[in-house]
Amino acid sequence: IIVMTSMRAYARDALRKIVKRSGKQPKDLPLVVCDFDDHDFIDFSYLEELRPLVFFKRELLRRAERFSPYAWGHDIPIWPLQFAAHYANLPPLPEEKFVDIFCSLGRTHPTRDLLISALLDAIPKINCSHYIAYSPPEGVNDPYGLLKGRQDWDGYMKLLAGARLAVSVRGWGRDTLHYWEGFMAGTAMMVVDPGIIIPHPFIPHDHYIPIEPPYEDIAGKMKLYLNKPQWLEEKRLAAKAHCLQYHTTERRAEFLISISSKVLSGEKIFPEEYGL
Image 1: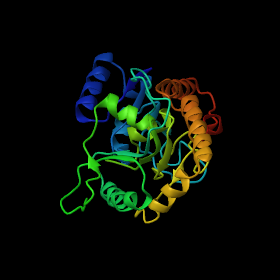
Image 2: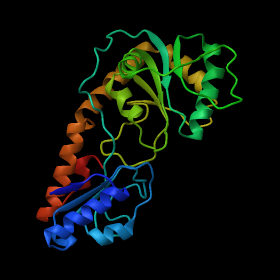
Image 3: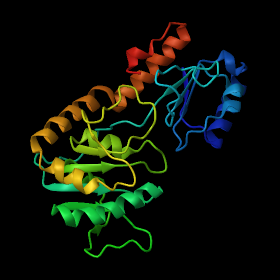
Image 4: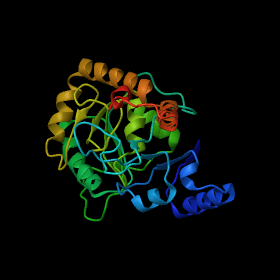
C-alpha cells in the first residue's frame, strides 16, 4: 500500500511524479490518501485524478446518524482518521492532582476568545486554583491577572495531568491535539463536541463534561463537578482507559491498515466493527 499523508501542493506534485515513474495509471496502484488539514472540504477533483483505494479525512463531518463510507455520494470510500494520543517521550507525570482548572490554548478560533472571557469571569466566583495560558485579544479584561504564559511540553503535560478539570475546544481545526492529550493524561475533561466522525467516540457524561459556547454556565458546572471528586475520578479513569484502548497512534495505524487491506482485498467492511 502506498500512503499519502498530506493533500498539500508539494505532496500532490510528489505523488504525481511517483505515479508517472511507475508507468501505471493511478487506479492501478494500491494508493491510500489521507487529508489531515484543518478544514472539512473534500477535494473530489483530486480524488478523481488519483482514484485511491480509500480516502481518510481528519475533519470528516457527520452527515447522518448511521455512518457509511459512501455517504458523500462518491464511489471512493471515505473514512475518518483523526489525531491520536501519542504517549511516547512523555515526562514523568504527577500522580496527585494539584490544580483545579487548567486551560492552555493558542488563539486560533473565535470560540477560544469566548471561552477565555467566560473563564476570567468564572474563576473568581468559584475560588479555585487554576492555570490559564492564553494570549488574549485587545480589550479582554483580566483585572485579577489570571492569564499566564504557555508552558514548554514537559510543563504543559505536568499541568494537564495534575489538573482536576481541563477544558478543550476547537482551534484552526475541529480536531485538536489538546483533546487527545487531556484524555491520555487521565484528566477529567470539559469538552465542546468537535462535531466530527470519530470511531469509538468518547461519550458525554460517561467520559467528559459537555460544554457549549457562549459558556454562560461554565462557572456553575466547574463548581458542581469540583465538588464531586469521586465522580470526576471515575470519569477520568474511564476516559483514559477508553483513550488507551481505541485512540493511541498505534490504534490509528491499525485502523488505516485494516480498512485499506480490506478494501484492497474486496472484503466487506462493517462500520460497526470499528465503533462507527
